[in-house]
Structure formats: structure tokens, C-alpha cells
Length: 161
Image (cartoon, rainbow, N blue to C red):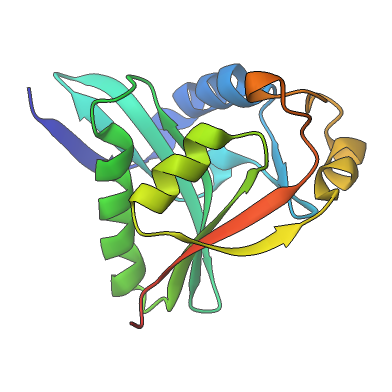
């Protein structure tokens, strides 16, 4: 079964809200002090046999492409990697110098995934999640593996190398 990737469109808004609410706790994402509504961002959808199996939303600004959300709805099938590969092509067409993403210190799966896909840790923002909780109190105190959620970690894929 082949996975296809396509840009999101207006018909996907309800699906996007549902995924973001289920996976992220509300329809908004708060990262590095900014609030995003993923359904208002450009993005990519992964589909298999007419079923949606993945979502990636992003923002391009000043020759940089920021991944806002990435959700693979079927784990360990390569869907996230396919979405990243397509985003890289999109960023290159947009003449971006880098693709970057922020995750939290507890998210070991994301840290492993991005590093396996050639992303490098660029910056660590200690205690940054406390500021985000002021905007989005739904962010839990404890995350994956019982690790307190405190810090933001920025990873990047340099496109100029």
C-alpha cells in the first residue's frame, strides 16, 4: 500500500482540528512564545487507500521553514519521514536556508526521530515551557516516560550545506 502526500486544503480543516485537539490538547499550538492555529497554516497530508494517516503543518518566514506540527497516525510505518521529505522539497522550492522544529525535553521519540532524519540540536531554551503554559494551561507538567516538561529544544536541518 503506497502512501501519497498532498498539500492540505480547506476541506481538511475539521480533520486538522480533530487531530490537533486529540494529539495536542486543544486547537492551538504554543511554542517559543507564539500561538499557532494549525488549520490556518500550510501543510501536508499523508494518505493510504483514501485514508488520512499523517499531518504536518509548517510556516515559511524569512527563508526559514518551521515545522509547527507533525503527526503520524500510524506509528513506525515511515509516514513521518515521508512528510519530512516532502517538506524539505517544499522548503527548497521556497528558497529556505533551513527547516527547523521545536520539541520539549520529555519528547524522546521526537528527539530520536528528528536526529535520525539529519536534524541537529541547535538551541536549548531552559524553562521555556512555563511561558507557554501561561497561554495554554493544557500543557501537562509531566510528559513521556515521567519526565517533567520544562525546556524547549530547537533542532534544524541546514539546507545550505
